[in-house]
Image 1 (cartoon, one colour):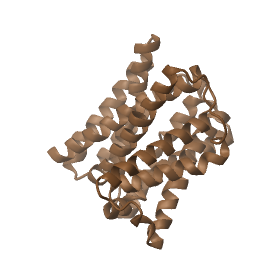
Image 2 (cartoon, helix red, strand yellow):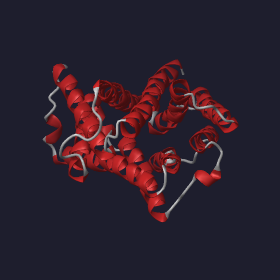
Image 3 (cartoon, rainbow, N blue to C red):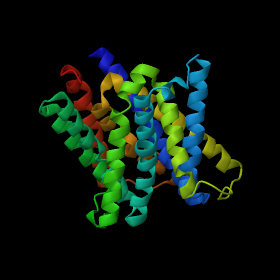
Image 4 (tube, rainbow, N blue to C red):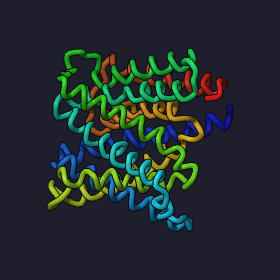
Length: 298
């Protein structure tokens, strides 16, 4: 139980970093006018390269993962579809709908992960899993929509892209488990993130850097790469073997809570009743999952 809770806290840190990354990306795209796909390519390629350097310094053979055919296939699927398609589909979901709608749909990733987990373990869902995911998703919904159903603009294309994004999150949370066990999380995550950035290059990552790149923008970009990508994905992927993909994905729904607090602190945006209710829901669901889930061997 204690070990489980300690590992969950690693995922909590990753979720906090994800929330900070959301604010950083919003600042760079909204205030500094960086192009979204280009920014995604930069953060993924730079973060993947940094993680691989870390792995090489630890005397890991970072090229060994490419030697066996099965390893290559799983790595390419994780990188291209898991990370690359996830980012691309998420931005397309925003384009075809809006950011709140895209976030709500992508937050369905724990449902995909739970279904896959139940299938692989050949069992039915536990009560704690159903309750925790329902409470957390309700809280995340309130946070991202502020309780306003009218803010959800769901076109067929937006819904499809959002679901693809959620499925891709499930993919990169489950598929690389064997690779991480064999080659370590640094090598596997580094290559996966790097590949995800490279596959997006033809779709807007090439060419001169867009945006008003002053000192503040470069500082925020560096923060997004080191904290919002290297630290976030590094900790998240490292925690997966210990807490499980389902638990890790649910804990990471803390992201809108962190992003909301930062928005209030920096931009002075007032909280609505739905925001308070959403935060309470997310925290309550995570408490249920962390305390009771540990007792059931999650």
